[in-house]
Image (cartoon, rainbow, N blue to C red; front, side, top):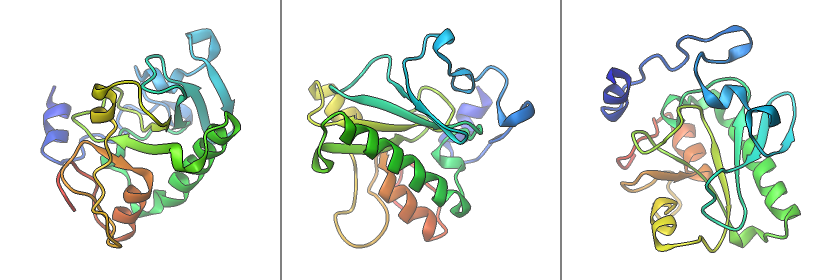
Amino acid sequence: MLDALARCLGLTPRAYADLEGGGTAKGCVFCRVTPENGFDMVESNDEMIAFRDRNPGAAQHLLIIPRRHISTVKDLQPHDIPLLTRMESLGARLLSSFGVPPEEQRLGYHIPPFSSVHHLHLHALSLPLKSWWRRLKYRPTTRGDSRAGKRWGWFVTNRDAMGILSEGKRIGITSS
């Protein structure tokens, strides 16, 4: 409860708390992604896992996670930009392999307190989304100009996240 409150306030409580060997967190469901645990895995490598969302918001809805536990986008630092680049590359490649052209792909993250699982996960979605609720839930809030960042909102695209981090700023629900 205190962690959720701290995250709402933009603090970073225990971003890597309770880590076990191998960079996994006790009790984190995404640190235990396997077919045996009910996940529909699409691809994995030493650094990342891609699997289908259990409650898809689009015809194609994948989650791309790092194997190393990072709590949320609010815990990212500039040194994580190469990881985000590789996560986006994997998500875009997989969506393309399912016949989704680049202009119909949305790649981004929910920002706490609007995220349900506190393990960094990139949503890789095909457009259009399934409903008005999903369009609202996965609505990017980019500035629409050349400056990195976003307006107030709970979903940030991967590109905007990398831009915010490259400016040395933190990702949050308010504009950067």
